[in-house]
Length: 294
Ligand code: SAH
Image (cartoon, rainbow, N blue to C red; front, top):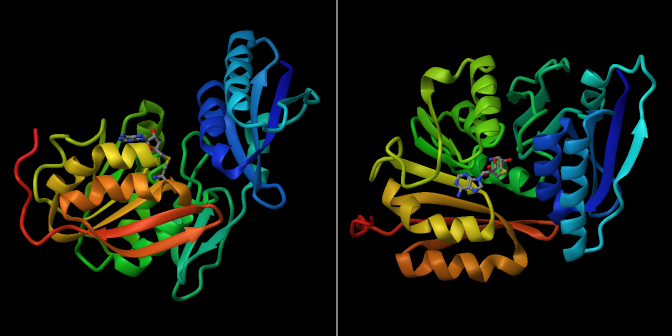
């Protein structure tokens, strides 16, 4: 069977849509920094997968209509190539914040005494730690999570932030994602990290029966400016009064969109975590519980 490698170099803000296409229609996904502000993405297909290739090509063209991105490169791999594992060679161990270490499952690591290790197989869903918003969410969580907290992870992807929350001492977490592939990947990662008992995982978004009113000490949503703004009222309902909301997935230029949804609800901005053109915002929820929202 002949395999093809598809690759494209894109500016940071196009990593998510192209990763989505690659992980949905291709086999495996790797991301690698490619010079200033750019990321090289790769996936693999059998050369007979015309439909899948066509979908990726159409998707790339749609993105290219918004912003000139690099062209899609397609090359045939030598037949003996271990395509199943070749994407793995592009990942490395990542250190984030003061103590967090993201370790792909297939790499060995001798952890230092203070290291908090997050073991992850990031092949098929978002959330590798390479994206600036994931990185800054992790840094903010490292600062704000205290032992025993109950955490809501909206848009869990690979489950990376939930695993970090538990490793940082959270007692319980609820992880939601609208994408069934993310749920499959997160479930596998939670199981292999041995944290399934502390996590409730479900497909969907807030409002959701697993995220009832006034349950959480901290919510993190690394989704998008629009997604955060839309879901804000439901996140507020799910939070306890005076709790933390880490909002991410937005560009610096989209801060106002999130602020205009969050601030009228009583959220107060407490810190900002910029990285490249992205930013993570940390809010506290108001003192009194919100009026019931439908
Ligand atoms: N939490 C991970 C993944 C972020 S990617 C990280 O920080 O790296 C964003 C994820 O949010 C995707 O898996 C996508 O399916 C999911 N998502 C997007 N909009 C959503 C919404 N409104 N509710 C729940 N999940 C959402």
